[in-house]
Amino acid sequence: MLKLLLILITVVIGVHAASSEVETALLEKLFARDYEYVISETEQILSTDSLNTSAMTLQASALFYKGQTTKALKIFEKVYNLDPQSNEIGYRYATALQEIGNTTKAREIYHSLFLKDSTDISVVRPYARITYEAGEYLAASKLYKIICFQFPEDYSSQRMLAKCFANMGESELARSHFEMAHRLSPDNANIIYDFARHEYSLNHFDEALDLIVKVDGKTRCSMKFMLVEADILFKKKEYIQAIPLYNKLWLSGLKSEDVYKRMGYAYYTIAAYSRAQELFNAALEMGDSDAATYYYIGKCFEGMKEYDEAIRWYNESLGRLQPNYLMDLYHSVASLYSSKEDLPNAIQFYKKALELDPDSALLSYFLANAYDSYYEDKSVALGYYKKASTESITPTLDDYIKLRIKEISEALFLKQ
Image (cartoon, rainbow, N blue to C red; front, side, top):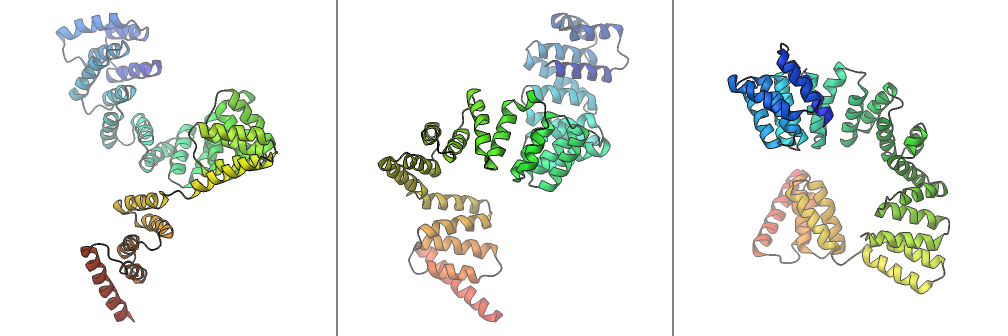
């Protein structure tokens, strides 16, 4: 809150560089958090000069930090409407909206300000951040490029641009900007953490670990760094080194299905079957339903020579590897992809469903229709239409399938 207060004060000064001594005194009172005084004095000013935007801004700021956000935002909006061309006023209004969580409206204002002046970094920076937080990484990357072009040594923006590229799947571009940010600020913990996570996501475990070990001891012992280091060691199959880190995380209160499962597997690899089984069970108690978890509980019981229990858990695992509803689940996912016109993914899941129910005429029809819609080569679609025609679905679909078989067959014949 104090940070935003300082921003607002700076903006007020920018809007009225020729502020009176009274307004300067009010700024000092605002900085001292004497909100009641500021509200009272600005009320007097506005009683004789109702359009004094400086006084209105001071009053709105005092009301905002006094907790009267609704009233404050009405005044902020009024000031903005009085001078919508002012980047400073627009920025102040958008910042206040952000503070209360109205990011949609804030982003609209930032966008209008950006359209007026795309070089104003005081606008571009928060607009880029709010766009990134909205998950629109391509749009955010374009904004961060503007900042990085003007200020190539701005390591914070280089880091955010790297995160945009990482989320867009542009791993090499992400690495390039992470490297740039790291060179500019080699001891910055946030950069090191994000860079290490990126390397980890690419299975560059040695590179990720090299980054982690460079941070100071206190930072390295923080939960988020310990978790990354433990996961890196786990992926490197250095389970004995990973176990103490996982235990520290567990003692620090970090309890999640994934942590329990990884701890369980690490203990399993060193034949600590009883402890491993306890941890796998803890994952199940937290809601885990992964077939692999049941399988490794069975392996633990097998290691402890409790064979009846091992068989019971293996059967539980098998039941989860191919549950009765799996075909319906694949069909549902395929239908969703199809409705989004993502036909390659739809085809993938229709095929999975058809593998579990190979005699389904309806699934064959859906596959035929997907191939027919997406690929110029209709021969694969024809094969599935023919398969679908072996069983009646509905009179309408039956007629359509016959029609497409005839049309595609004739078209393929003419191509020969």
